[in-house]
Length: 166
Image 1: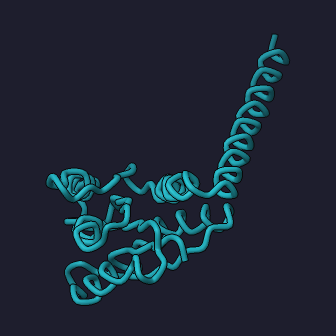
Image 2: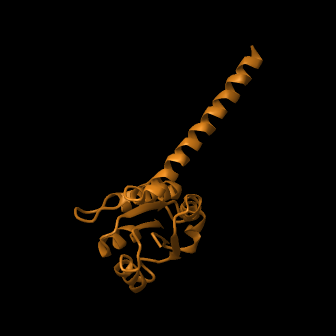
């Protein structure tokens, strides 16, 4: 496994599944599970402290509400941690999650993506891994080229629509 994807609750899976989808698309191994900072603190400690020894290289941690999971995991491992703030049912428009993950104290860095931005978290994890793995880097370049081609195709359709109206 190269990437660990963890979330505070299974209700976060619709968001966090976006990270696993992009990692699948790029052919990057990952594990995915629920680790609650508040309800299973011992599990969280064990997960964070064993992550590197288990072969993980990056952790993506998603949480809503108070969103302590990414920061607590970052305090337990030397691995890069990417936090995904999740707009949960008890959220204050997601701002509680964003600020909880974004405002980490000095010495405990957590990269933070947009609210519900698990796809970008997966892509950021891939970029971290791709900095030392040419195969992953090449797949990311191909992914970027496919996005560019899709935009150019859409632009051409829009332009053709405009010409048809003239």
